[in-house]
Length: 250
Image 1 (cartoon, rainbow, N blue to C red):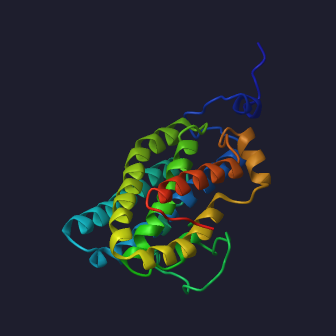
Image 2 (cartoon, rainbow, N blue to C red; image 1 turned 180 degrees about the vertical axis):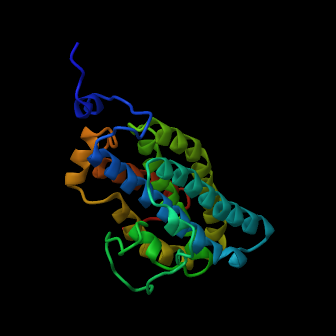
């Protein structure tokens, strides 16, 4: 009986359960995916921590603190899988400037910065509570869609971690929507300004419409839906959520 080549096995929906003997390209792409998630969660947590005390009340502060805590926990769970893959995780032990941000008017598109795999959107600063809530609504919806994709990837232990994480990230998005419902009654101007600022920056996080990396990830069983398919779902979801409050985006 002829053994199926591993690339063909993965392309046909096969699953891997151990980092042993995985193809070098597969190992590299899985590590890259994990690093992007870990860095983004840590940067998101650090940025949101800075606005906890801007929250208008105890309930809102508790919700914000929960998001900060759970995002760090999510990063830690994926970091364990990275270590099993042989990644050098020492940079996560030291003091990396996860709270660092560029100027508010910077424009880096979707480009990641050297030595930091966070999504570009997490390089921009939050400008107070209203701004943070709107950003959380937009990015939270994006995270839910992204985690649905990650939950199906071909490295089974990592997919299981993402399936465990997904409900809590969905809860973060729900908390954002609850906060937005309050803000449209009290700070509508700030909400509209934040939507104009964050909407295009979050949209860029899905990546280019045409992506050579997607074709590779599809062959490796790491992706199933295109960047554009996920972006369109996000756009539809966000516009429906905003319409509940009489809000629109361009």
